[in-house]
Image (cartoon, rainbow, N blue to C red; front, side, top):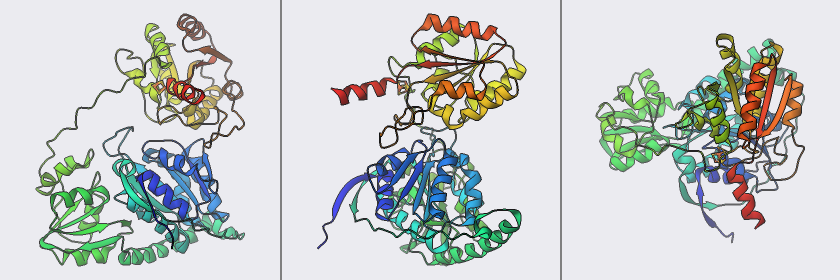
Length: 518
Ligand code: SF4
């Protein structure tokens, strides 16, 4: 008899375990909270070819292409990462996938560590791909297997959406064994895989038909289940909203949606006919609520104030009563740079020089906070350099752009090429601490190590900056404050494009190395 093994896993880990057992062969990602641990967990398995890709677009395309070529593959990222991969996502539903391909988005309601709280359920509808939403780690483990099957049966990418609470909650999960799935043969099919307009048009027609079949599957799917209890109150919900609602109204009737798109319209209608009062409980956007309204069903709509921020169990009574959200987010401790962090001396220099600083995404975004208060913009990955160019068009010499090493490789390089190409002069600072620090110290091409910590070709930041067209590339220790101040002042006065690489290893990495080496 096969032995079962229970393990206490986070939602990310459970999803990764389920994907592994489903015969996953290739997994690609770029670090981003709350999705990072999916790839880190998968990296332990020799059967899975795992990679930190340079950015999410690259990750998505490598994983999708692996599926088209015949191997079950997975892409994972945080919600904003999927924006970077939108271009391939939007057309991948047209081409189809051949072997199973699942894209995982880990959304961050409440912005625990993100620049926005977009609701990626909407992207499934825009990209016309099926959407599965587990509410717990155990469901994440189960749903990912179903996602691969749907993907293969319907020849379509499947989007699986976690949220921070699902990704980082832990639960006992009973592990199974890995099923080896045979590689599918790749057949040359120009009409399927070459998306020129004539082929794409036909594929769009076929996709619309496929969505009708997927809706029929959604109607039958046990992931969309009715729990008929007291008919006085019927609640339609998805993801963690289901658990929060159950906590408050254990005796109500439920339609719990786990296969959220295409919507199971008939099941929604059937459920509405069985209850006296209908309510939709969901986090962020009125995604289900609008669908219910489109079906002509009368359901209580939540107050717009509930479209902002994370849902909490204690909010549910007010939400159902259609009251305005009164509770304010809990006062959180202000994040700070670690003691001895190499970003501190750099920002103290920039502050002393009175510079306007266009910033980017990483630990160094904290340079915006007092007492450093010397980072003045931060929009998205790569914008430290592109914002510098925009600011230079309006302001004088007193602007510098800053970006981290991992972020520079992610989307900073095109910005630097653009600066050189468009003859912009000035100073960009790459804060090189030898890791992707903010997400927990992951490797990237300029660290010379893979996700499995194996040595690989190391990208030289100096060489690539020169190749992108920088007139000068200086390298200096982040801790040499006086020399750095003189260098920045000197380069600012020149009519040249300069990249200054300030280099010093992240304190967390140093501590980890010390522990490992004794
Ligand atoms: S993790 Fe590293 S980069 Fe981030 S604040 Fe700490 S020392 Fe600085």
